[in-house]
Amino acid sequence: MPNLQKAFASQKIFGVVGASSDPSKFGNIRGEVIENIESCKSVQEFVNIAKQKYNLDSSKVAISIVTPPRITENTIETASALGIKYFWLQPGSEPADFQDLATKFNVNIIGGGPCVLVSSAI
Image 1 (cartoon, one colour):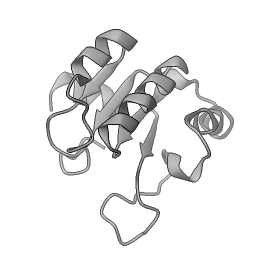
Image 2 (cartoon, rainbow, N blue to C red):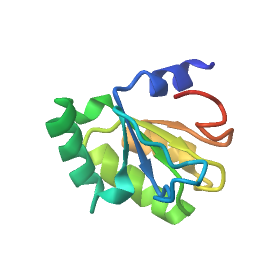
Image 3 (cartoon, rainbow, N blue to C red):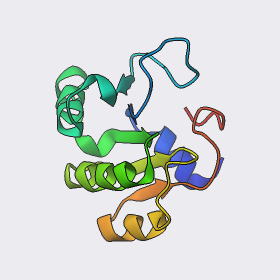
Image 4 (cartoon, rainbow, N blue to C red):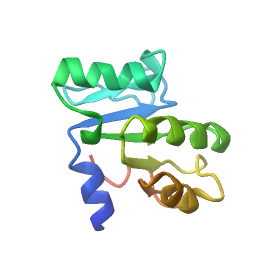
């Protein structure tokens, strides 16, 4: 597994933006260190849950994104402002300039490759 994928997987909390709440869907995961951001009203609420429930700051959070590219860009901007540094863009969610976004927001973005679940990174 490449280093950036290892760093993503080593974060304490894994959130998903755009995941289905349907338990029969492949991307619907529940667990002690996994939270579905869609059950929250915002990324900020998700970060607050991470802080309260797991006593972690946002620098220990990684987010997988499964949204259209324009929503992905907004999510990265919002989440990076909250201190989140690791993002895995699922196939089809990547803005064309996602590598430029990594530089612009000083974050680590995995994109243009396999689904995080298919790659077994988590």
